Image 1 (cartoon, rainbow, N blue to C red):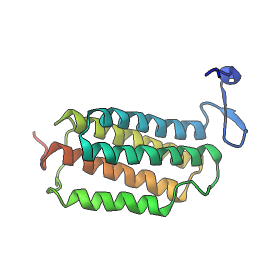
Image 2 (image 1 turned 90 degrees about the horizontal axis):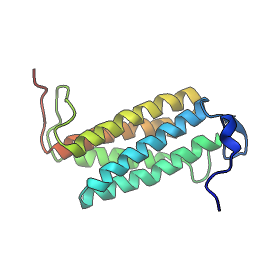
Image 3 (image 1 turned 60 degrees about the vertical axis):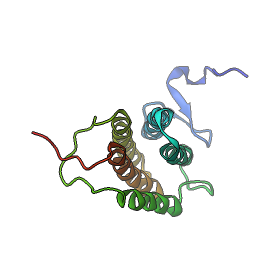
Length: 167
């Protein structure tokens, strides 16, 4: 099987339904940003220890479902669910109990892993904006919103301490 099809040479891409859209339209922009977030998380996982690596891999697997739902323009049986959002919230709560949360702005870059998690967070925020523009709603929007919160908490966890901003 060849990886190239030539069907996208005209600047179009196919949704799961077979419908073709311009590659710069809102849906490909949305699931493309989710794909970017998943790739940045791959950088995190490549450097991570056991617990963090497992958490990141679980998120990466969920992001396939987010992309699938966006690419199919419909709620699917295997799409994003409220249980997935609840799982993110449980992770936020669990990690948040391990350290004191910063009360001031944090400057990313305390550690490489934390900086990569912050990068992933900003890409997820962009994906959230693109998903909103594409008309996504419900669990997809909640999932992306909560994921960015979790990534912020994960970055602070990886820094190992609460870091007040420095002047």
